[in-house]
Image 1 (cartoon, rainbow, N blue to C red):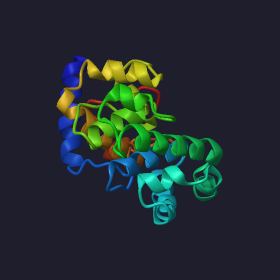
Image 2: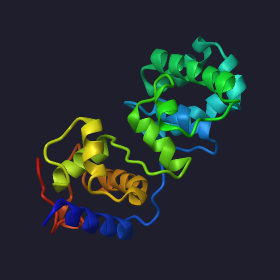
Image 3: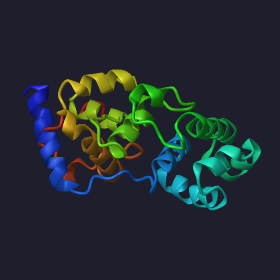
Image 4: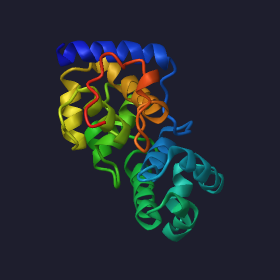
Length: 211
């Protein structure tokens, strides 16, 4: 079976298994997703969703957060870890949105990458979820699962995984495919325990590399 054929099977089966493919970070405005995805680095989405409630209650819009003292932001986001660097990036980001983009998040990939603390994973997530553009988000679940399945061969560097997946995942499927990998990685193809292969919808086609 070729990687293209395997990808087609994986996409269809995950669609049936997880029909609702959505981001697990809570947000109702683009700038909030930008904040949350920065906080999510080395932190669970569940914890981020709790922490940002206080942050947005105190700073309800881009202007308010841009004007906030970095130390005050840090005091709120500290439970997410790396509080000092995350607060600094969030503050700088909001200032740029206010001064250069009239408070809006840019819909250009390169412009997103130029924002403090925004890497390819974050930029892809925003392009896919906010702007509905083709996107592949190579988070830890994605990297682990596509290697195990055999969609990529022993590639661990996020950008290289992303480039390899662009070759076999249809552009219109990339964003939702990656969201489904997150669900599958949390529920079945887990990292901290042995994967639950006996109840996996991909058990008969999975390469099971590195298990």
